[in-house]
Length: 171
Image (tube, rainbow, N blue to C red):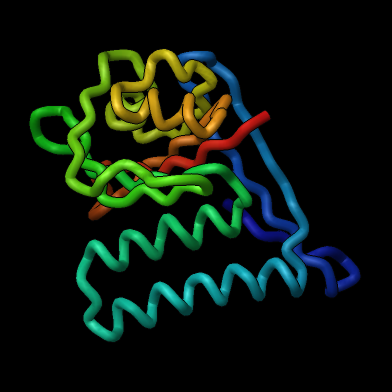
């Protein structure tokens, strides 16, 4: 992500670039984040930071992260997952627009070459429009919400892929 201040000094633009390694595509999105949007982002960050400072349990912090991200992006769902040594993913938080999300602690098994495995193996962000390739119960949740695509970004800890954040939307 990069932020640019326009020549007028009043407008701030944010650009995000991500790579779809399997599809050999590069995506770029830009948006103006002047004032209102920047204030929303700061507010979300401050609310999560306040929970951390208060010593909130990790599960509470993870739930706040996905809820804040879902609200900021205006998407149907956001998931925070942690990669395990055996290649599986443990769901830490799932914030959904309608109904209940996937329970924290649920273990997902991504097949090689699928979105979750690719993010783990490449540390690259990607867009997945193949809901059928998602592991159960993620696939059923996506179908229930009418999700048509999702963006997964790696979460890095000490330079290593620790997990991912995923934002899912409807077309």
